[in-house]
Image 1 (cartoon, rainbow, N blue to C red):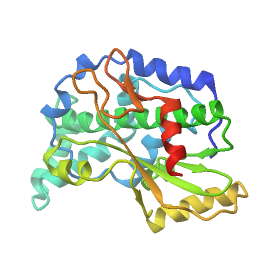
Image 2: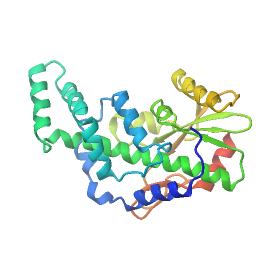
Image 3: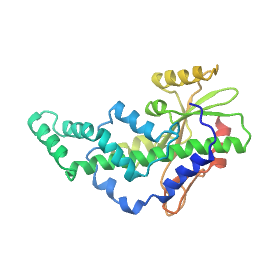
Image 4: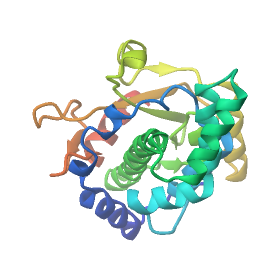
Length: 262
């Protein structure tokens, strides 16, 4: 889907971001890491991405509302997944744990799932804001760019696609990680580096191009990184943060940098 500049949608997103109280969740994700390793099942990933996607014109939910919706829709599916992960060979204990989670909202493992979903909510909102920053920046620079984004592309590792008059450039957004398992691999990759997209991603991008009658070759993708501020200072020149420390992309600075490498 081609993302149009919509100030009302941008303001609604920024309002949710700026009103979010990080202090409420301070230490929450570091305390509950039991559900970090297993990947979310694809149907769950697509569902939550569609709920928060830039192609969704409904109001962006705050995390409290999002968690309430997510738990009702996918809670027991994730409960079964975490129990299977914890007890892969002990069916009796696995089923007992699933039943306990179904019976009690206060079961400790719900917090592990909630922490995982919370991090996903934060990252998706940050990525959404980046998409709008590019759309807004390209308008301000009078660039003939089209920005394509969808939940399906996001699930395949493509946060958005920039279409110029000469090229089609996928962009993948990644947060610098401080988790031991992913720190070295993610943080050692150079920011704004170019890489070849997967076959699945290229197929999805081509489908979007066909829908919009775009006949251009798909170029190498760009890795766009972000990170939390360090001592109130942004980690990358195209980043800033609100008073609550929620990171956002500065539209002019981001587009200026992307112009140089596309």
